[in-house]
Image (cartoon, rainbow, N blue to C red; front, side):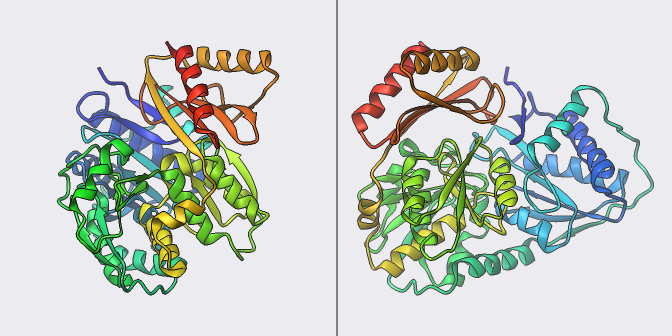
Length: 458
C-alpha cells in the first residue's frame, strides 16, 4: 500500500489509494482556512488552478474548484494543463491571492498531488505548508457546508501562454537562433502545451517527440537511463535534446553523441551564461548542488548560500538576500527572479542562448566547465536517522566537517575536502525513500565514498 507524502514540497500519493477525493477535499478546505486567517482571503478574491497532464488531474481540479468557488465564493482562474512555472506566473499576472498546481512532478503517472501557492506565485513556505498539514492531522479544519455562491470560473489557458512567452523574452532577451535545431521531448507532460510555440516565438527550429498529452514513452523523471535513447530520433540538423518531466520544472539534455547532461551540468551552463557581468553578490542553491556550480560562481567572485533541498527553501533565501539567481542542481533547473520555481523551459533556453552566442558546440562548452563527477542513488526501507548517525560517527572518527540543513530528516553532508562531499537526506516527494549523493573532482574518490555509504545502507 502506498503512503501519502505530505511535506514542504506538497502532497503526493497514488491516485485512488493513498490520495483520494477525501484527501483532496480536506486539503482544499485546510488551505483556504489558512489563507482566510493569515492572508485575509475573502469571497470575490481570485485563486489560480493549473495542472499537469495526468489523467487524474481533472478530477482533482474539479473537487478543489467546487470547494473554493461554491463554498467560499472565490473566483477561479483555470489555466488548464500548463507547466508549473506558468501556473505560478498566473498568480502574479492576474493579481491572485494564491492557488494550486495539481502535479506529482517527476513521480510516475499513477501518482498525483498538489502544491499550494502564495500570493507571490511561489510554493508556500515550509512553515505555512507545515501549518496546513498540521491542521489536517489535528482536525482543526473547518469543512463548512456548501454556501449559496455561484461558481465563477474563467479559463485563461491561451492568454497565460502568451504572457509566459513575454516573461521568457524579458529574461532571455533577443537571440539569433538561426542555424540551431533542437529536439523537444515533453514525454506527454505539460510542456507539450507550450514548448513548441515558445520556440516559434524565439525563432528556434525544432523537432518533437512525446507531444501527446498523458502518453508517456519513458519514465517521467528525465535521467541518464531514461532519456539517452532520444538520440535515435535526431535528424541531421539536431544539436541536442531537451527532455522534461511532467510539470516541466526539470530538464535534462542529450547531446549528439547520446551523452546526457544532468541537471547539475545544465545549471552549470546556465550560470556560465548568467553570472558574468551580472553584478550579483550571492547565488542560492540547495545543498545537493554540485561543486561545479560553486566553482563557476567563485570565478566571478559570487558567494554561494546553501539551503535544504526544496525550491521553497531556495526561493525564501533568495528573497531574504535579494538574490536574482538560484538553483537546485539535483532537481534539474535554475530559478531566475521574478520566477519563483525551477523552470525547465527557461533553463533550456538560457543554455541554448549560450551555445548560440559563444559559437561553440555543446560539447565544447561542457569541456570548459569545472570537471566534477556526481552520482546519486536512492534507497527504500532505510532509516535516515541510522544513516545520519553513521555519517556523524565516520566524520568524528576521521576529523571531518559535517554540514546540515533543515530538521532531522534534512540534508547532512560530509566534507572530505574543498572538492568532495557525501550527502544524505530523506525524500520529501517519495515515501520511505532516502537519497544519497556523492560529488567531487576525482571520479574514483566519488565512487569510493559512495560505495562506503552503500555499505552503511546494507
